[in-house]
Image 1 (cartoon, one colour):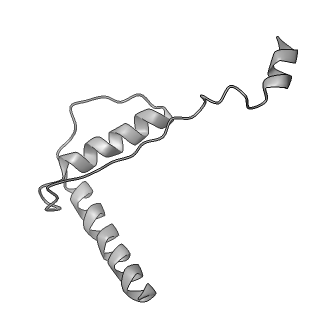
Image 2 (spheres, rainbow, N blue to C red):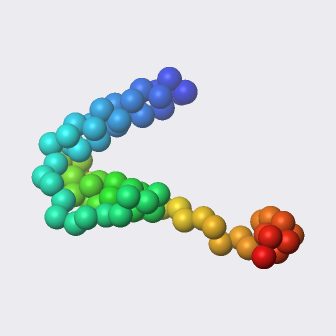
Length: 79
């Protein structure tokens, strides 16, 4: 079963890369930030949904830095 999942993953990677190689250019400019790069990839994948025969896609992006408790003591000491 592991080999089957691995093979499907590799096949999907090839299929997605081929679709992205043939995509039309995006008209939107994204910032060169971690979030901007993630959103650009989401836009690219949405752009190639037809060649990938995807009718429904779900994407997750991450944005950290909201835990103000991390290093709170040292941060307060520096202020």
